[in-house]
Amino acid sequence: MKMNRNNKFHKHQIFMKDAYLRNYLPETMLLTKENLVNMQNKYKKFVIKPSLGSLGKGIIIVSEVGKEKYELFILNRTKNIVGQRNLYTFLKGQESQSIQSIVQRYIPLATYTSRSIDFRYIVQRTDSEWVVTGKYAKVAKEGYAVTNFEYGSSIHTVEEALINTNISDLNLDEILENLETLTISISSCLYTYFPSIKIWGCDIGIDTKGNIWIFEANSAPQTKGFLELEALKPMYNAIETYKRKYKRT
Image: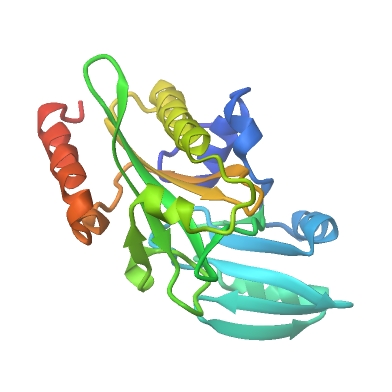
């Protein structure tokens, strides 16, 4: 099968083949009736995402709140559905005609002032190596299910955000080192399949116990979040410099 750099499930399959990266992946399957039942039996709370798409569009968080009773969280709205068959019918109805959804284990993200937080790392290719050129934390807007900047998330430096999370027994230096190692490894892995791509935007989550999770790697990452803070603007300039110097081949 030809891998599509924009397809979330294809990239999940690529990462699963890597002995290091697979340790950081939430369980993910294509949305079928059987896979939905399996995920529901294991976790009771899971996420539905389009396999193609960006900016947090189409993300649905599903919680089982009773016997065949489900609460769906879509952006800042909730919807209740009764019946497993009705749930599957609704979720399949949200799919675009040619874009299949994936079902993924829900990760209880660490929080910053009671709002979910995750991290965007920009990794770029020089002539010989991958380098982290920018990073920031995204804190979800109050009442929202996603951390995407386009839906009102606030931007923070990674260090300041981590210090103010509810992660238990936080070892800041260790997490920072692990995040950098992981995101470079993600980019190196994808380079094997997509050698023309010189930039990846890696979206990484950390749960309340400090476990790190890979959510996405985007070959055309948005970088305007770096303009939100003076402390991040040098990173924005570095990213743009790398884009000009090391153009896609």
